[in-house]
Amino acid sequence: MVAGLSSLDSIELREKTVLVRVDLNVPMQGGKVTDNTRILRLLPTLEYLLKKNCRIILLSHFDRPKGKFVPSMSLAPLVDAVSEVLGGKEVKFGVDCVGTAAREAVNRLGKGEVLILENLRFHPQEEAGDENFARELASLGDIFINDAFSASHRAHASIVGLAKLLPTVAGRLMEQELEALDTMFAKAQKPIAAIVGGSKVSTKLALLENLSKTMDKILIGGAMANVFLQAQGYSIGKSLCESGMKKTALSLLKNAEKNNCKIILPVDLMVAKKFALHAPNRVVPVDAIPDDLTAVDIGPESVRLFVDELRECKTIVWNGPVGAFETSPFDISTVSIARSIAALTASGKCKSIAGGGDTVSALMHSGVMDSFSYFSTAGGAFLEWLEGKTLPGVVALLKAA
Picture 1 (cartoon, rainbow, N blue to C red):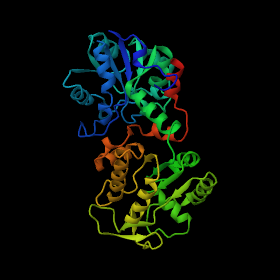
Picture 2: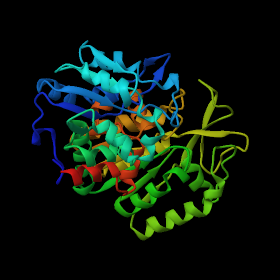
Picture 3: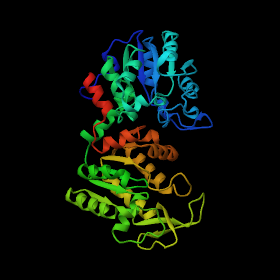
Picture 4: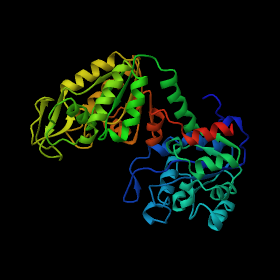
């Protein structure tokens, strides 16, 4: 248990009506959930509450409707997905999260039953952190459980407001996420390395700055590596690159050196004329990228370099793929590194943690999710935690304890 955090075991829950903030913002296509990982991770909390014969009210957002009702962003399709994870148990649905419709849906809810209320973000007051909106939500239950670490970087009404109005504890997933992060960072074994990928330095500037103070090594891949290569004088052809970040990249390299943090960049790249499935490609050194080609993945020598550096580490953190892994064969390097880390973890040579939407997708694609020490389903919250930021939802939980 993270110091100062109250868990489900610390409060009397039997036959209570509980409001559970969850994150059902999952990938969907054609009205069907395509990845139910986030829902599966809620099982420990839901099963515990069902054993306590609670009336369970699930609160969640979905996408960004900007305070308006958007039919395609309704939580109604999630009813079947949650029911399936609960072994076919009936899950009810309320067509609103506040007002008469919500109240009637809660009143019809029996002990040991589950209800999903409609998308919180259909109301602008949710993202505004409106106190009156939080009071309306609070009036529906006896106890508040925050099990949405992935949304706890937002000071929204259902995250922070509810924690001020009801007896509040952390759900099992929240507890698990915080314990894993605390173990990996506050108590991490050294040497510790971070793999940072993705497309833009600008979106991970704070992350890189903070990691350079805490990591022994940072391995940079993906399109963001192009910025550092260009800053060092390499021609990068038609590769995706934030050219305006050159000074920032040089500054990051300089600060990392001051902090005794080793920055490892690719030494070769896979390049192609077009970004398409099975597009013709070849591998070139970073100092020989053709003017008419685009870097789509790091090359085999870079993979060997990265893996050799990781073998020396006791703790490995991963955020962001090192290539355009969604399209074959530009997934080769990401898969190779993922499987190497999985093997190191399985042999007990290191502990590994991965987080961020693209990273989790990459691990699933590589078939090694169960082989990492821990993977976080959070995106923005995981990033902000790595950046050293305080998460409003976690602060609210600690204050409520």
